[in-house]
Every structure is written in structure tokens, then in C-alpha cells.
Length: 113
Length: 115
Image (cartoon, rainbow over the protein chains, first blue to last red):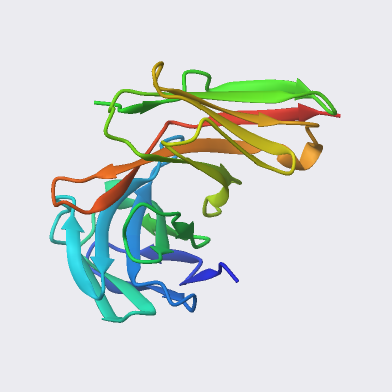
């Protein structure tokens, strides 16, 4: 089973809203990732958690706040987003965060009005 | 600085023929390469990978070739099927500035299989 689940599938929010994206995996993986993908562009890495500790933060604006409550769950808290933040947000997981395959969830399509 | 490049944004192939997707990279420190398939509004699905110590890996209809001296990899799909129509991303794994591994993706190639 290589399933990563993400909720919600779609989200529309205003610039003053606070919302959260959720990601879950039950593969026993210890590394989890958030990516952002704009139309016709490749996924871009935002954050990496390895063993529940934030290990990579690719200079993402503070209006995006990741949280890893345990090794199976990864959240992305959103606050005061801008319309240009509209994108597909992808979660991925891998065994330990080393040289290995990352498995992706279906993504959350976010629209900021 | 695009370290992983897919120079063909699109490719059309007749059903039953071979599809060849290409990818070039510039960073010689990349040590693991992957191909993902992606449908619109869905997450990338892992297809096949290859370590830098190998030059070929095969899985069913999919074969990945790696030419380290040319910094080039390719994905061969044979025979091509209509369900293969999707966007294909190559990705390379290497050390980030923080010392952890990270994936760098190419820009993608849209493959269309013509029935």
C-alpha cells in the first residue's frame, strides 16, 4: 500500500481566512513533504519533516505554517494568503528522508479570492 | 537555475509504438533519478527509478536508461497504450543546502497516445 491521503480535495478561501490542509500516510514513513504546483510547472518543495522535525524550509512565506503532530500526519496551516498562492498543494512521504522514492497524495486544489 | 530539464513539452505517439521521453540534468551530485506520471488535478504517481550506479532499470513496459557521462536519462514505454496519456516528470534526488535529500523536478512532457 503506497497511499497518501489529503483533505480537502478542493478549497476556496478569502485573503482574511484561516484554513488548514491535512495529509496522512500509514506506510510507516518517517519523512513527509509539502510541495506547491502551479499550472504547467513542476512541483516545488516547500517543507520537509524528518522524524517529526522540520528539516527543510525552502524560504516559504510565513503565511504558510507546517505542523507535524506525529509521524503519520502532516498539516499545512494557511493564513492571510494572496491570490498568487492559488495552486495545487501536494503532500508526499518517504521512508526516512534519504535517497529514496517519494509517494505523493492526490493534492488539494486551493483557490484564494 | 533549472537543474533538471525536459526539453520536449509534448510528444505524440501512435498506440502500440515506443514512447521515448528524455531528461537532462546539470548537477553531477544527483544520485537517484525517478519518473512520475501525472494526470490533471492529481498527485504524481511513481513509475520507475534508477540509482546512479546503474545504467538501466526495467519494470514491465517501462525502462529507464541513465547516461551519467552525458547527464541524460530517458524513459521508454513499449508498447504505448492510450492510458499512458499524461504528463511525465523526471526528478533527481540530491543533497539540499540543509544536508537532507530533496527532489528536483523537470518541467514535464505531455505524452499523448493516438489510438
